[in-house]
Image 1 (cartoon, rainbow, N blue to C red):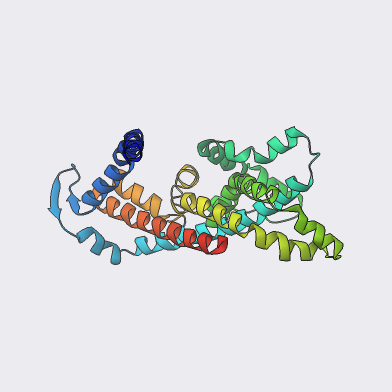
Image 2: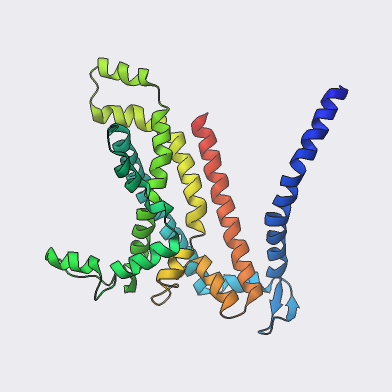
Length: 289
């Protein structure tokens, strides 16, 4: 009994630095943001009021609801494309075992690129006048597009850019799941004469479901707080058509000095992210069970 108590005490002491780091770097800023969300600040940073006015203001703020819509629209569009293309790329890498290492590295290189660099690169490619994207379209006899300058195309274009960058990340996760699948199941399916289509939809996809849900959880956290690429390319434009809740909160806090309202927006976004992660984790637990 004493030995067990000593071991527990030692484990508690060893985990204390990690606990202190977590509280200081995560819990304290979040609690401080919640406290700020109940404050009203002047343009000089002075506290002029206290209460739930910032949250009541959100209910009547059309841009807040527009930000929620754009956030979830971009999230859903990007997540679906990344899961579909990531699974396809993982299957390609899994079957092409003799693919040269340099080609494998090129496949996974986009998500290693800093978002700022990726954003600047795509700004040049998608430039309506001089960009390579419109040059390719006109060469194929297709009409050019305004891409990031078009209210209708800006969110799909941002989703395409993020999909280009993060599909290899999803592919690596799915590839790990593919490599862990039992080969005996495929041998039995081959003996029974199952087609490739039947093998994929009735064996591979069901067995990969826990891995796909894990990829959904990891990408959901990033997509719901999508910021850097949008700020580099559009800053919420044109005409607020790419103004996600994250961008809206940033502009309220650092451009209009509405620190209390910006904090309330970020607390709301954090609750949304937490809710999505909890829901997906329950889904993953149900799938694994």
